[in-house]
Amino acid sequence: MRSTLSHTCEVYGLFASCMDQQGADANASFNGRKRQGLVPDFLIRWTDKDQLLELKTFHQSKLHFPDCDLKNGERCTGAKRRASHIHKEYVNKAKKADREINGHTTEGPGPLGKLLAMFGTVQGLAIGPRGEASADFHKLIEKIGEVGAERGWRKTGARSVAEAKALITPRLYRAIGINAVRAAAHLVRDNLGLSLLGNAEGVQTCLNNSHFFTRSHRQEYYDTFCNAPNGFVS
Image (tube, rainbow, N blue to C red):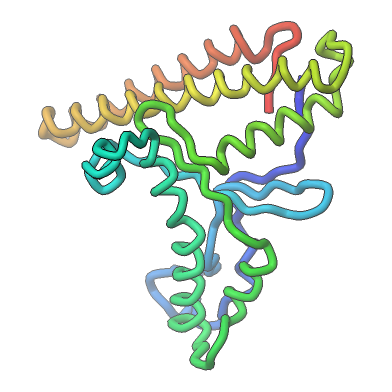
C-alpha cells in the first residue's frame, strides 16, 4: 500500500527564479550552471499547502548532548536541539544569497527570502545516532500514516481508518528507525575505514564495497518488509 503523497526530493529549481542568473555565465565557479539559491531536501504537497522539509543527521558530541542534559535527566535532546536550528539556517542562507548575489541592501527580506516565507517554517527532520528523531519527524510519520489510512484502509484489511492507521504508523516507525540506525553505522564504518587505510585506492575500494552492501541491505529490507502483502511504502 502507498500513501500516494505528491512529493519531490532534492528540490532543484524552486528558488532559481529569485536569483540573479545574468552573472552566472561570467562567474567561473558556476561554469554556466544555474544558481539555485536554496535546495530543500523535500517538498510535500498536502491538500491545503506545500511544505518544505530538511533532513539532518548528527553525531554523539557535547554540542548536541551537553552534560547539563544528563544532570537534568533529559533524553533525546540532540534531535530537538539540531532541528531547532534548521529554519534559521535557511533564513540566513536566503539573506546571504539576496545580499551577495541579488544585491539586496534595503530593509526586509529580498526576493529569495520572500519566497521562502511563503512556505512557512521549514520542517526540521533531525535524526540521531541511535535512531532518535525530532518532533517534526514524528509529526510527519503520523501524518503519512493518517493520509495512507484514509486513502487505502480497505486494502489493508482493516475495518476502519483508525484501525488502518494503527497498523500503518508502527510500520513506518520501524522502517525509518531501522534505516536510520543502519545508515549511522555505515557512516561510522566508512569514516573508520578512511582514517585507517590512508591511501586513495584503498579508500575508494572501501567506499565502493560499502555502497554495494548498503544497496543490497536496502533492497533486502524492502523485499522483506515493504513489498510484502499489506506492506506499506510511503
